[in-house]
Image (cartoon, rainbow over all chains, first blue to last red; front, side, top):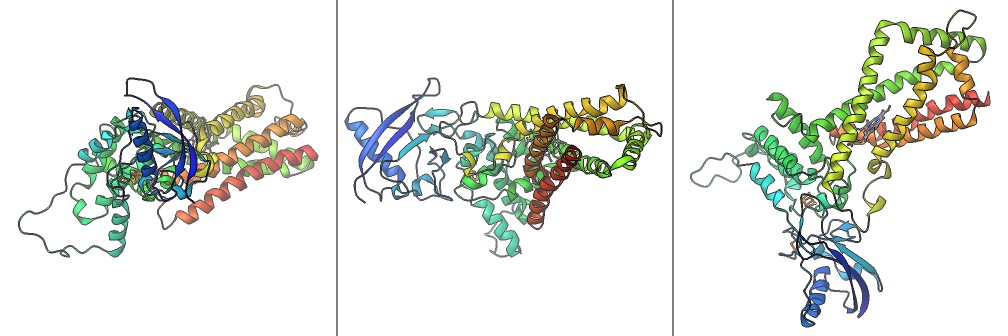
Length: 250
Length: 221
Ligand code: HEM
Ligand code: SF4
Ligand code: FES
């Protein structure tokens, strides 16, 4: 279908000191093969040519791996399609005449910088608090020197698929960062390379998550349902276990 | 360790442990209530003797204090956590995702818990308070006649309806709570996940259903 139309309602906010508001935009000549971000690009070009401020949104890879294209589309982080980032969402998933509301991630820990762009540095600080893993330096190690079972490898790999986008925080009614933090913790805790700092790491990362002011996990499962990488709540179970274990061991 | 006790993961574990204890308490309470199914004088005699035992046996008294403490702990910890989580999302979404990514019960545990708390207060006033401090009569065998008080309470259609409605709230609370507690405590491993889900749903249906069937029986009897 060529030339279909949508009615957009987009959150516009100059900076984190000013109040934001929704602004309506009608687009009548969309191509259904555009990605969601391309649709915004087209709108922005029009705004620029009519000397209006373009809509600020984050994007980088546009292939679903960097995790920067954060926005809540009709109440869903990264839009209606399961297991998909906004950049990989195409307009043929919408219908002619649809109303589409776009909001930034909403969390106290992710303040709006501008329009749809939020400050996700709390995630960076959590990663930093995790520190390092101990490895021997010297010549490059042999690829398969450390045996790792197939199950452990897959378990760690599924956790490592997290792209740090923050959709889990956005989806959670408590703005909890548990899915993200648990994926990062589990990835290393389930591999031999992660063992030396295993206890120290989980305590440091969870404590940093606390300091950043994210909410707690009530196990609603909204994070897993909205995560573009479909990270499992299993890792939250694992994080809880690891955190208690490390603290009780002392 | 410094932040362990102030961490929400620790506090949530308290919510899970106290909730789990309360589920065990409910099963015990339900087993006792089953005696209300016994009709006639035999039922009256047995139930009142049981009530006497439950209010005088030192082990049961100790257990009852643990239970009161657990209810208070569970309420305070969970309401505190809910309050904290509200602070984490000061600006709400314009469009809500509704039931598309989570169950209604999982999102409304605080509402359901508050309804249960209100029920508990009324429930304790009706029976616990009457048994301990009320001016209730004695049965032929010389025991306080809680049985007659109970049967009389459930002759009132509104009181019976309120009880049944409260059991519905409990059912929803448990439908999320039981499985959630296992997850909170890190026990919901992939090996047991399926069984835990079934046990959780089973407990959530069976316990409130049997509880509710007793006042219905008393009402229609
Ligand atoms: C006999 C009564 C009750 C039982 C058996 C029970 C059981 C449970 C269980 C098993 C959980 C799950 C804990 C977890 O996710 O780890 C839970 C959560 C919860 N309960 Fe209760 N509960 C009862 C009464 C109450 C009361 C009176 C309140 C009142 C305020 C309450 C409020 C909550 C809340 C808000 C949660 C969610 C906590 C969270 O996820 O942060 N519950 N309950
Ligand atoms: S867990 Fe999923 S939703 Fe959360 S940051 Fe990682 S990829 Fe994004
Ligand atoms: S722009 Fe990189 S994941 Fe969407």
